[in-house]
Image 1 (cartoon, helix red, strand yellow):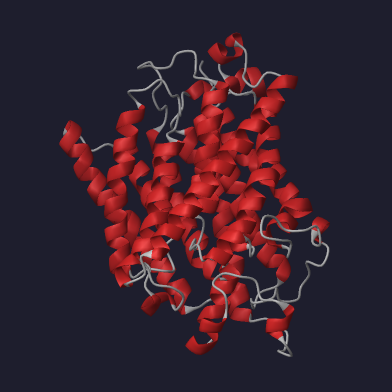
Image 2 (image 1 turned 45 degrees about the vertical axis):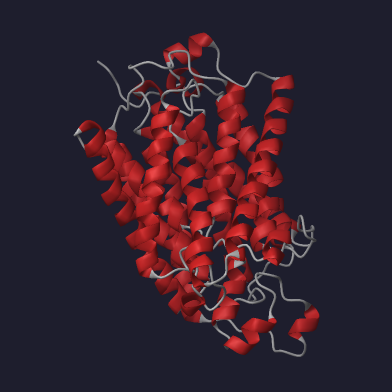
Length: 440
């Protein structure tokens, strides 16, 4: 559902909400002679904080990923997250935002807001925050979504080619899908519920990551017992900072300092807690040794799973959702290590499986008594589960196909991965001329 639309719906009475197409943009005719939306200082203040929190998530991801690789590739891996702040951030402002959130049609936005034309200090329609702040908040989502892909191709992809890929991907893949779901596109019209990015962010990035891992190929030493995390404390730090930033990610998606923001805040606290609890038992049952990497992964899986549902389900449902989400992602991790797929940091298991489970369970647990928008299966609306499955399937097909085409076109011009000598030496030295740690 369009996050701007959610704020609008929650602030109107039930009679008006029933008259508005679920997640669809407001037409000029529907607006009629209504006064333009007024800015609200409290909402603006909250969204300033939320935007900063989501921006922090990209450096947090750098620590999470950086700790999981070998020391000779730590800086390269962290830079793959940090560089998204620059390249993806700028291209979002230049064209991505317009393609995602301008009026356009069912499949993509138009160019009416290209180069931020018309994106000023006035309130964006259906919100009470400055249009320019709405653009910046949405930009932080695009930035971290592109950075998530790096987890599948660390320790082997050429840095310059990675930068080119995620920049093109943000424009050609992320922006259209964001328009489908949040910008008034065809999935919004169908009534797909995605509060903060289960399909737009996590399933989208995971499928691109899977394609990239296959096209780029596996690391020279994979599989090998030597491919061990060099700094588990870094990974724990990253997981903690991600959880902190995720409150802006989910609660900020209400686009107001509202009761729905409070609901999303609480569900974002409870779901990962439940995932961590179940994951710890799974780890203990399998190896009798609950691991720190497992705990960090569990937190991320729980956060991913609650993202599409955060403002649509009750707190108790969030606990159940988080607990259930632990099992398929844990099993996906166990299955992946027995294959030749080198999804190095398990983007597919954490974000793909977790995002899919979360999106589907949104269609199960959604409750109009809490969100004022739509019921799910348990509240007597089984159709919502079918709509959620359709959204997941559409994102998988589009993101997978276009990501493959982008990578293949680039490979026709230049190699995608570092050469054997660079990979053996480590990408920190060979591609950046720096080392994370000095060895006397």
